[in-house]
Image (tube, rainbow, N blue to C red):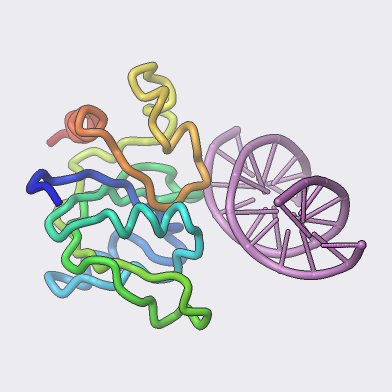
Length: 141
DNA sequence: GCCAACGTTGGC
DNA sequence: GCCAACGTTGGC
C-alpha cells in the first residue's frame, strides 16, 4: 500500500441518504452500507483510511455536493445477510461551495473518460487525481 | 414515468 | 459454462 491518497466518488440518492444526513453524523461518520455490486466492492476494498471521495447525489440533484473521508477500511456490512459484500466507513469533510452537476461534467470533454459518465450505474468509482482537482476547482475549493 | 444499460439469476 | 429472462439503477 502506498502512502498516496486515492480519490473516489460515492453515490447516494438523497431520498435514501443525503449529504445533510452525512454531515449530521459528524466526526463519527457512518458505515457506507447497502452496496451490492462486486465492482463497487472491489473499489471499496482498495480504499485506505484518509482517502477522499466525492459525495454525489444521484437521481435528485445529480451533482457532486461534498467531500467525505474514509475512516474505516473494508469490513462486513451488517445489512448484508448473504455476507458476500461489505462496506467502508466515511465522514463528511466539507461541502463544496458550489455543487458540480453531472450536466457540467458531461459538457466538458476533459471528463469524457470519468466513470461517472462512462459507467453511470457504478455506485462507487475511482477518480483520477486530475479529475479530482478539476472538480474541486469547479466546486469552488 | 419511461427506457437503456448493466448485473444477477437460473435453466439447460 | 452459456445465455435468456429478469430486476435494478439512474439519466432523461
